[in-house]
Image 1 (cartoon, helix red, strand yellow):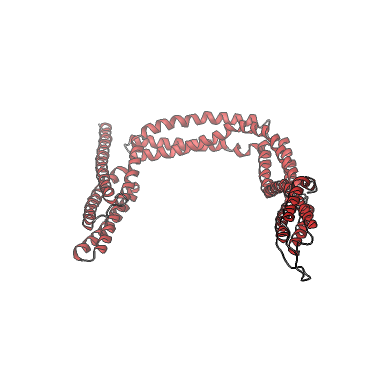
Image 2 (cartoon, one colour; image 1 turned 45 degrees about the horizontal axis):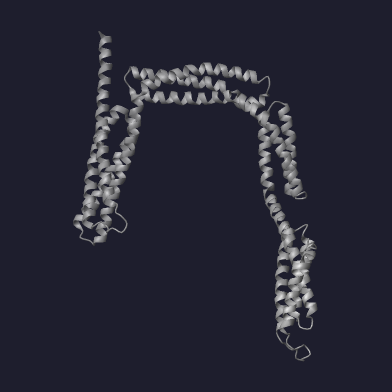
Length: 472
């Protein structure tokens, strides 16, 4: 008889909790629908197309009133639902909701104070609009906070409803852990014949950890079944979460062991290529900066890493060897990256220098020939440009091998100076001027000017190729 009464009590408790949960779900759902409807109404009132007239003060006050009434109703409803939630989820689980309801009451009280100010204070329209907007902001914040707690309880309610199925599923996964763990121990034993203990150290303790986690999962599942028997869905859901955490962690540890053979094989096959790449990079560092202290240090470290990696591979630790080579490759690459950029710029400068300097030399020869033909007319300014251009061109030739970028700058400057010298020389020839002795110099005839221009052009087109060859 006592057993029957106990069964009846358990069934009655379960039915009561189910009814309470259903009522709470109905309350929450209705509250959400009302909140969403109010939010949509507020959004519709607040949003307006670009260029539309702003909302009137009267409309803003109406929205503030509606928001305040709605949120006050919502807080009252949540205050009532708090008791149902505590009965279904327990006081500990509902403590955040209890705090949120208390904070919501304080916020609503503050909003009512502001609302009273609107009744008692006939202030300017701008002040009234600011007060109404603050009321709406408070109401929106309270609604958003309570809605977040409603979402949390939805998740918890779903977890409790699925607790029996989750416990059954996790029980099957927990039983599989034993078989997987035994296979993983065999895998480690087989790998130990080909690879060193260092190579397996990262996962060697995983089977023992899996056994411990499987024990935790088993204990949590047992607690969950007991909770289901006494009609305590909250405790059952909590036990299922603990069991799932333990099972997931154990599965991850076993995944590491099961994936290790493929990782070791990939490391063995990729190590030779990685070593070759590092050696090539060491050669590049030697070519780019053979005397740079920082590069020399990085190059020495990379050479040492190659020796250490070869030793690790011989000792049966290809993963460690590959990690070492990869890390050193990245460090050396970072060290020589600026040198590579500099070398690329230098190579580009060398390519342009040949053309620019060749053209500048041809111009120098042509303008010198023009000056020789009109030495009585060409003044000091043009001759200075020619001399300076020639000096710059010679400097570019000397810098071409070691500092091609500076050489290119000098060659460009030389070309500019020679171009200016030609213009100045032609101006001197075509413009009458007084000699240094004070005697007037006859103006050059048009034929002479034309002859000078033809001479320069002929030299540039004809003999310029010969001069170009005397570049860098």
